[in-house]
Image (cartoon, rainbow, N blue to C red; front, side, top):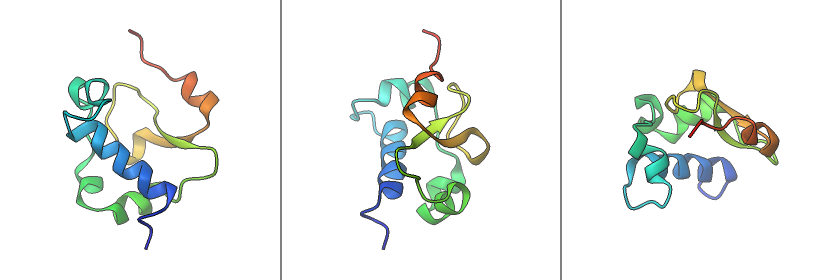
Amino acid sequence: GMSHTKTYKSYVDMKQRCLYPRDISYKYYGGRGIKVCDRWLLSFENFLEDMGERPNKRSLDRINVDGNYEKDNCRWATTTEQALNKRKK
């Protein structure tokens, strides 16, 4: 029932970046060793339970940019918050 929501799109995009080498962003995520936790890989429902629905004008952000996608390292962030949370090159 949520397959057309922004929350579900964020979930799918996160998995694509980390799991699929053909994804345009893979080299910055999966290619650097960034993983999605097993709980979230198991189901969208687990992701939704941990993160809640995506608020307006926010996107999925890793607090530690070198850490994995998991409950304790993710938040729904504004564009400004994400811009301030970039990895060092």
